[in-house]
Image 1 (cartoon, rainbow, N blue to C red):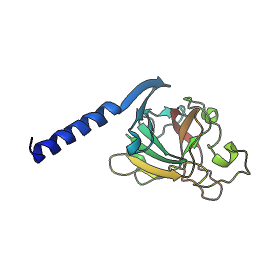
Image 2 (cartoon, rainbow, N blue to C red):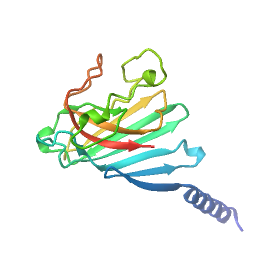
Image 3 (cartoon, helix red, strand yellow):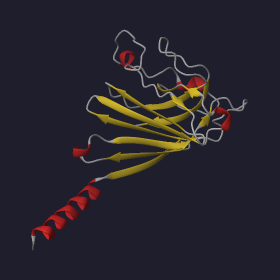
Image 4 (tube, one colour):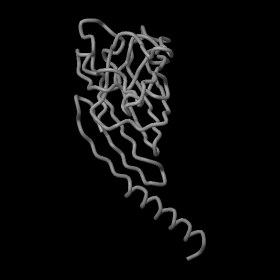
Length: 192
């Protein structure tokens, strides 16, 4: 076998090994599909991906999120977490508007914004004095662009404790001092 054939065979074998080592499982939680992907150690830690239609937290009121769908991907790398929120199908009236979005402690239940509880806060979770900022909570504010899409990325120096949680979209951008962002409009369940 010449060197070129040997390299091609090794690359093919490596690709096959990577494909066989990536495993996924699916579960349906509150109407959303959760896809948990375990990647090889060399790629970093596993990613939790949840996608589906947003639950309407104010069903009596029309919202630009009434027909929207979202995806949340949390990737843990040691004690750090990167979270990506992508929202599609946002109503045209929201174009250019910025919305606050956060990981919350509680569950996502249509018509019941209170079920989501407060923001997930790492200092609170650790029993420390509560500090409210983008380094102790997962803030995912986004601006609606193009054909009704929004995207946000958060990098935090902690890994959230596993439980049934939610990402809640609020009516206003996050206030950097108080962490508040107005009324709760929609949510997506996140469980791991």
